[in-house]
Image (cartoon, rainbow, N blue to C red; front, side):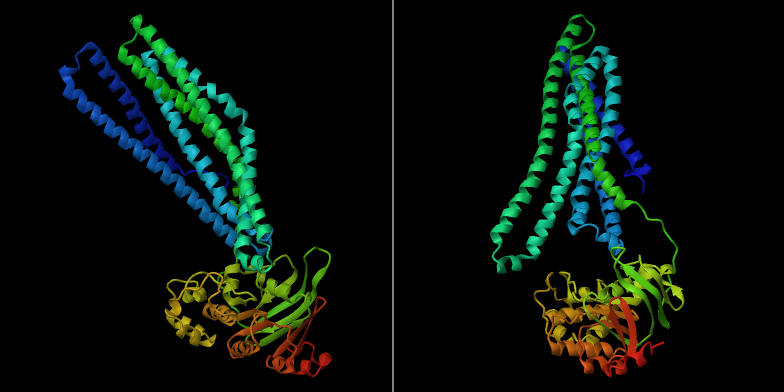
Length: 557
């Protein structure tokens, strides 16, 4: 996608509708002029019915065509901006995690709302308005020349009076839009934190601080918006001033030409109407061009996000059948300190692996690599001899399913929060609910699986949230469950129940990060993957418990 533009078909239809609409508007001025001449000559009553019907017909057609033109313009602008919003959202959802985290969430909120709204109002809409103005300008210029060329000269000169002020402030408006976009981004970010962190704010009695900061961000947003509005008001004022001046000159010139017998009384009226149809389009063309140019930085920002990535063909029929082979895997966040170094291990299907290590030893980083959240590592990962670089992220995610520390809850039904589908497979859902231990919870809800959970999950317990996270993974039916310390905030009894349930899944490969070193807990797993200072070693669980680490090394190979 190289440019933000309308397609040829849409532009052609709007072009034709605009020509018809402007022709009827100009024709209405001439019919009105004829009626004025008839009144002046006292001959109107001779053909009153014909002129009345002609006037009514043209008025109805003109009003209808203008309504259709404006409605179609609004449709095109809304449809196109909506399309860009959808493409942009899709691009954001498919960003690699590292790329996504380069910007704060408020940056993406602002992109999807404020920046797209700026694009809609000041670029896409202005583009169509400018086209319509050009067509009206051409039609009115040709028509007024047929009356007398003097009126064309007056109209063009009067149109350029308000030009200097908008042109002078064009660069300022562009810079101010950037400031306004940043102020909007900061405001959205602060409001989000203020709402999500309301309990912490109350607990630590820092309401006054947040109210003060809220006023600061709000005022910055209002101030930047008001500065833009001030310039736009100045443009409007200059337009009104030029309008008064134009009519004074037109009427004076018309009277002089009439006194010399060069034009009729009705022609003065037509000329005044057509002059306005020249002046207004010229001003609109100038203003809309300024508005369009002022969105340059916003368009560049959006285009950088909307630009299509180069498509690389990858395996779209991937499935995990035997083993995962990891060879010489190394990774560093800063390019200097390695979190993982030359990791070599094999993970076999349907085995249960407990991943143990101190904080910062590389466990979570290892998981992020297995979830394809990090792809700039060195070394290779093969699944059944196929390199992960040859597998699409979408296909990979069907087989490798995360169960994370925090389960994000959407403010939707229990069923949707598990399946992410409105029309879900009831049998699969029932099985996922049963296996994850949610049956009692669901049976006690007033509307069962159709009960809506609050967005923050405040109307369910921590254990229920964890079980919903597990039910999601089971419903998705991937072969590998990547379990990243999901039990840290729940009681021991619930933890043991969920752990037992996970280990009972005979047809699933389980990799579970844990800080527990309880021997009975460890023995339930087939193998232990031990992380220490970026070095990874694999033991069978029984030998690990016996502390026979040298003999147990790589027994899973």
